[in-house]
Figure (cartoon, rainbow, N blue to C red):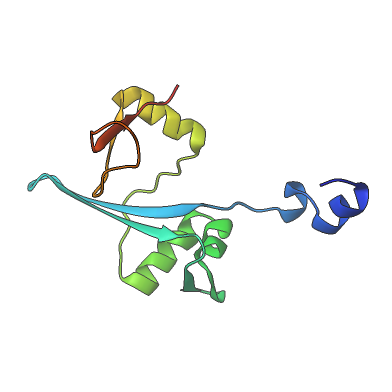
Length: 123
């Protein structure tokens, strides 16, 4: 923002309050078959939030984990056994603990390197 008038018109992060999520992911792990399924829910997904009516999935997240779990069960018939909230700092810790995260591309990336797999390392 370039001046006080613009700042007043747009407000600040403190004015917004609450919490937001860029994406929510549900991970289902089948230990016996050694398979994992990950489903990503975009933050602007329109859902029915129990006790609140229709709204963006972020509205449930703003209330808290129990509301997210309740909404996932009501809207998608997904039972949640464990809840983990990961921010950028803890994600960096996960990547550092693992050592790298391979990223696979179906189509070769537009780079001069011929490989179609990249590893991302946090620092």
